[in-house]
Image 1 (cartoon, each protein chain N blue to C red):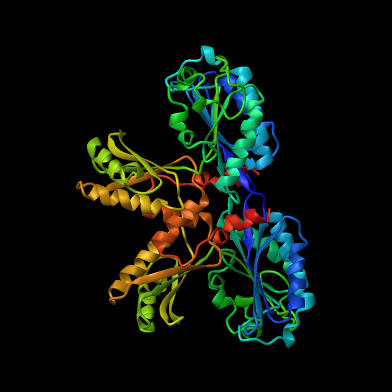
Image 2 (cartoon, rainbow over the protein chains, first blue to last red):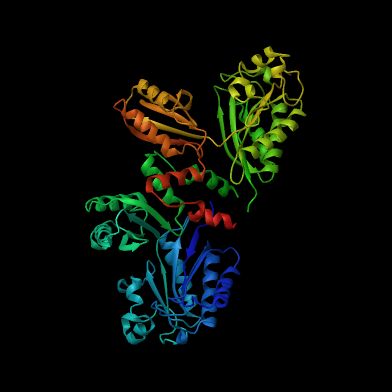
Length: 298
Length: 298
């Protein structure tokens, strides 16, 4: 039995200064047992998304190290960018991987929140780590960004879970949460009509009464109507179920799915679900995958 | 770049004496860097199939260690069982895994063959390692088992590639070869009529003009007609192509596929092929699989 693994996907408010970004990522890499899986910086948003993973203690230490480096390196008061932000380290979600539950990730978020609070940053716990239902949704927590949070001032509903109640304009505040692994999955239709993609997105997304755990938008990408999805609960709605919902909704508009794409990483289990579904496999676990068997032994 | 990996799937002529089998497997485990992925012993056949993997040097040393242990532990002259056998260590195929080619596996088979020959066992190279076309097919090499080989005596076409030309009845001879990874994949039909399974098997298998790299038999298993397949070339014929061939052939007999099963291990790439095929993914590589990304980093 290997120890449970977690992923952290911090977003911080620097997407332009490459040297600064390198130093921030280096703060994470110095922690032994942490593997950096991706760094994506956006100049326009002036924001970076870092993905790293490891066992609980390593992910916790790396998160604290990153928070400290963000406070040192990023001056929120002089930061500009298109993306609304409320802190130098802006958002820090923890995601359960192998052997970990969402509750484990929420417990890790609380530990991290407490330590980050002691660095002088107000911390708001969200999603599975939230301490009140009105603070579960990240969009509600960060509404209006730093300025929105400042405007809520002494509202008892919006006091931080950890850290000082006062906002320091140079540091801002951070949202620390726990959520399930999220798979970004896009379906390209055989039409350039964005309205078809929008209608399909409305039909399949949970918000409008569609499929549980599916967020969807209709876009036009590369001259094709694209249904852009986030699958937030792969147990409830695996990839094949989401795709078949899109295929069916597209057919109502005389359209069909021409191709699909996975953006970023997907857990092995999501791929196994696809094979089980379409092959009609009685059983398929990671133990049946040669590389997994090899890796387990290491 | 990690070093190439190989798998060895030795079959040895002992499937009953648990302590003896443990000692034989232990001979493999003592070699550092070798991972034992499976041991399957069959009492009726009095035969065991061992699967292990690792880098070239480790797999080579473990194979030699196993051959030596087989010579010490197994007396072929007193061995009985239903499965035709020609040696104590009977068959030793090498399979290319990550980063390795079939030619690499053939080179490894020749190295192993030479060393096993020097242990006093006549060695016959087969499949991708064969030195003559009439010796490529394992069934031809082992025809008649030990007794068949003994009967061919001094026939110049059947002299061993390595080791002494004389057969020792206590040790026998061993076939050492190289082949591609083989996936065992069975489809259960919605009928109990074995004739339908046999007709489907004839239609899909390469031998009778069907799908390349597909070996198939019609069986009845658990009261269901089953098309039992070995897929020997997943690049040419991936799982979805084999399944669709079975579905189509079954439909010709008014039958359909109710469920399927993978027996043993399948490489990750075989599963990715399934996802690419049925999801219509533009791209899906191991780099997109979270666990693979995690494991690569280790």
